[in-house]
Image (tube, rainbow, N blue to C red; front, side):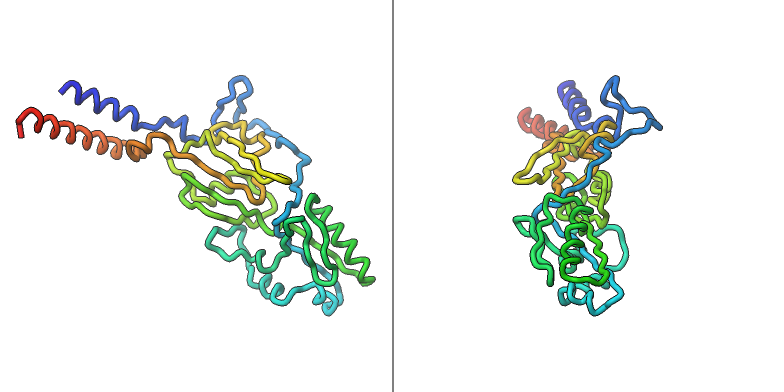
Length: 273
């Protein structure tokens, strides 16, 4: 029985998960640890998102002349905007209203608009892109036409140990990585929260970054805010290979199952059964 007890002990130890692997935003950086109530500046306070190819932007126009505004509208775009309604976020199953009412940038970063033709917006911030469209409008129309431009939501994808995986949309122009995690339904207890892989698009290519969700230093990281087209992938812990291990009862049930199998095998080989 002694080997069986040792086996049970080993199973219980390997099936338990420390809170240090689960809790968010711990102090893990030694002398640089962040204390409670401490002010944490952003990694880049002057950072602004730069539009990239295949982004979708919303462009609205305002003018006292309603007939003039119709020249800038594709048929059906106005109805799509009216059906948008309220709400701050949309999941993967919700209709992507900006896909129907927004203006997509092509692979070269150009957007095609009625009357104005093609305008290159990639490489520009929201405000710089708005000014560029405003200048194009002023060339064609002398009447007062005001332009509003903004990103058509933040599209990202979650994979791995999230309750909900797949493409998602946050209808804001800025969102944190925890906004994305909460929309994905929180991560599984078996997730390696110290090894979240963030796959981010850059001009001309892609980079993979590793993020530690357990560490408070994330709040001062350049990856604290997600960007359009980000992919978040959470790997499972190795414990999944031997069982769920999500709670004590699951671990105990796993251990008892192993002991039962060992005792049955021992009984057969010893001639007891």
